[in-house]
Image (cartoon, rainbow, N blue to C red; front, side, top):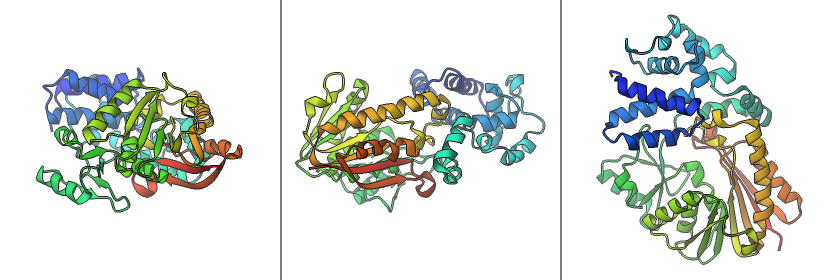
Length: 393
C-alpha cells in the first residue's frame, strides 16, 4: 500500500491535536471525517489506524524511533505496518538505521515503556492490582473488536445473525452472554444497519452490567448516570418495555442521543431528566432498583480510547474518586427500602470500585449482595466492575 501525502499529513495533524492539545481522539476523527466526505473508505481506515496506533503506542514508538516528534512516531508506526516511508516525509520523521534492532530491544525496557503508559499510571496499577497488572495492561493494549447487543424487543439472536448474513455481515455469538454478537476483527457495522434499531453497538463487558440489577416488568428503575444510554436501553429490553425508567445525566447532549437511540430501538418507557433540572430529593424513595454507572477513570476502556491514558492525571483521578463518593451518598436516597442498587464503573482499579462502595456499605444502610469484576485479560472484553447492594428495609 502506498502512503498518500494528504492522508499522511491529515493523520499527523490529528495525532498532534490528540497528544499535544489533549483533544479526544474519537471526536477529532469524527470531525475530520465529517469535514472531508470525499475521503474514501481506505483513506479513512489508514488515517484511523495510524492515529489510534500512534496514540496507543506513543511511548514505545518514542523508544523505537529515538524521537518524540509526530513525524517520527508516524514513521515508526508505518514501519510496523510494513509500509515504505515516502521520500517527501519530513526529515525528522526518518526512522533510525537501527530501528528494527530497537524494536527487538523494546521487550527489555521497563513495563511503562513497552506497554506505553505514563510512569505514575504504571506505579498505580501495580500498587492496586499487584501481579495481575501485567496481564491487564497487556490486554488493554490490544485492539478491541466490535460487539453488538441484540435488541430483544425487536428480534432474537438467531434472527439477527440471519438478518446480518443476508446483508453481507458476518458475526459470531458470544457464548457467555445470551444477546451478544461479535464482528470479525477490524470489521464495523454499516450505519444503515445500525439505524434499523435491531442491534446496538455495546461492548460485551458493558452488557454484563444491566442484568445484575434484575429489573422486572412494571417496576420503576432509575439510571442516575445514564450517559448516552447503552445500559439504559438494555434495562428497557430486560423489562420488556413495561414499566418506567428515569434516565438522568449532567449532559443534555448525551440525553438527546439517548432519546434518539430509544426511538430507533422502539423503546417507550424511558424518561430523560437532566441533573440541571432535578435533584435526588425529587425522587426520594421512588426507585424499585437503582443503577449508578458512575463517572470514572475509564481505564477499562483503553482498548477503544487509548488517548485516555495521556489525558488522565493523578489529580483528575482523585477528583473522580471524590465524585463517586458524593454520587453514591446522594443518589442512594432515591432507592426504596429493600431495593437493589448496582454501582458500576468501567475501571479496573479497586479504589474506584469496592473501595468506593465500601463507604456506603459502612454506613449501615446497605448490605453487600455480590461483586462482579470483568477482567480484560480473562475475558477479552472491556474492563468493568459492579457491586450489587441491597438497601435495608
